[in-house]
Length: 127
Image (cartoon, rainbow, N blue to C red; front, top):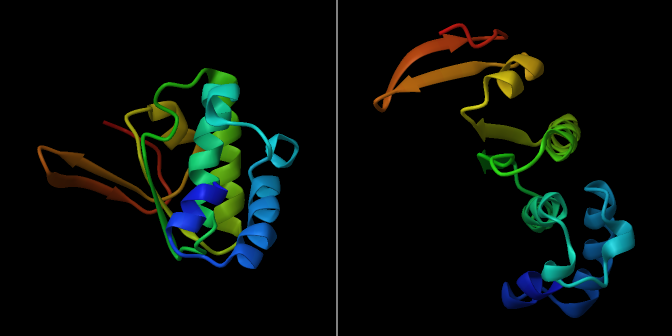
């Protein structure tokens, strides 16, 4: 995560300030000195989210953020995204997983062949 910020041109003092805070948000504060190959798939996905958060985005797009994860890691990622949303960041979550959509009960826009076929304010996936 620090390397990505360094490449983006962030000053060293900001990197040292931001990295621990953001890793704590995603539950990886105790893994700060680990390399990617030393992390599980779920932990690596959390690093991806943390790297995005370091730039304080107004909108975060997650394209299948739980695609290759087991049910426990999937739930943890969803909880992290919900927490980020509560902080005020808009989350656009792209998924084929109906269970995730139904669990969140947020606005659901359903696309088919690139066209909007449903737009539910706080609905469930019904198709």
